[in-house]
Image 1 (cartoon, rainbow, N blue to C red):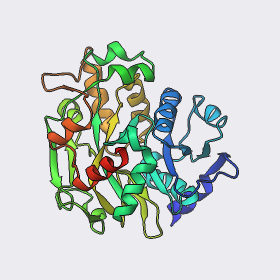
Image 2: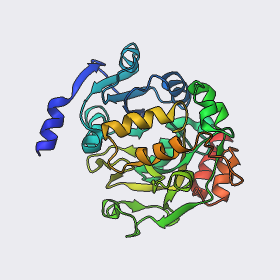
Image 3: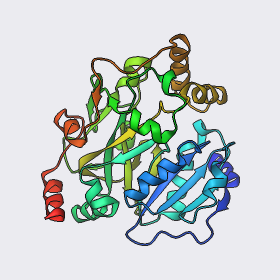
Image 4: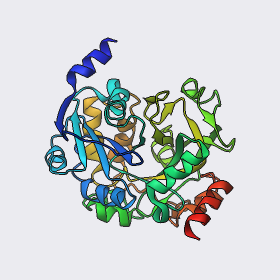
Length: 329
């Protein structure tokens, strides 16, 4: 209770008086700190996907992120300058509770591109039409770490838009998979009341970050959630509770290594923001390997959703395929 009181006292409203998300629209919820590097490409991508409303909660930006966001009429901006490791759940939940009641909420980070089969054709509103028709209240996605062929140090000066073109490879050769409700998942108790529409759904861990940096990172998220009265918002950064999970999965292309990742990890490690210490683990490897590359013989070039489904990384649905066929007929 004390933690919630401290959070409530720390939140500042900075921009977006009268902000409203119409029925049927999707609200993108973004936790940000020093996101100016990503902003233009971020908005270009998500507006093309049909997202027209964005709720940002800033965690202490020192660049011009806030100034730029406050110039836009499609955003609401709040700020909470508190330790991320202790308050991340409340920060992610606040925009959903404040602006996204009874709306679809898409939880994304600035360095992520949420994508799904048929996205260019039906957009976000077509996707939520399908989910609603099926009685599903959440869509799972697997995070796909994107990287360039070149050493990371050689591309750290690229703009984010340039990095999106250059970071064209991924490596899923060392991904570990567990049944959705497996007790081998450290936070499995949080998943207990979530209902599956397909038993094929799995939680995935590791990937190229595990391979190179030894991170036991969770790749599975529930980024798109209908914020009904029964939902518990983001008790863990990767999920919400009391949801019915859809029968297919999406992908999140993750560009964590775009820009100067060593500088970002040094700042994060210095602040102690990440309780699990992954920033320190990456920084150690980056500091001792000047020409570090994530590219190897296991790397594959991005070629869309289909190869990921064929590899078992994503789950497909006959019902959803039939829905897409009906939309394009």
